[in-house]
Figure 1 (cartoon, helix red, strand yellow):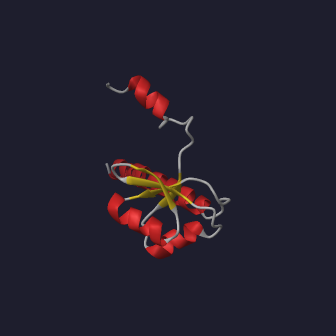
Figure 2 (tube, helix red, strand yellow):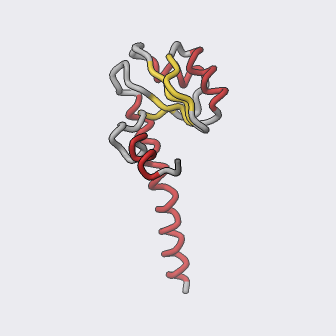
Length: 109
């Protein structure tokens, strides 16, 4: 019984830590990007729009919980974090699973 509980605790820890580690890696990768790439700010769109403008970025798209921005400044990601961005990630590839084409194809019209 004790080993079953320990094993469950280990799997629960893995289930929590693995996605958190993946988001952390993606967040760190954004710091090494070349300028001009589209980035996604995760969190409240209103505050993230203000953050993006203060950091000198251009607004590309606004979603329910995301704001897509871009800038040619090589220090843009750092500027976003200095301005108060909670999480900055690289925008998914248009051919990825969040593709607008796929969403239109399988979404309700």
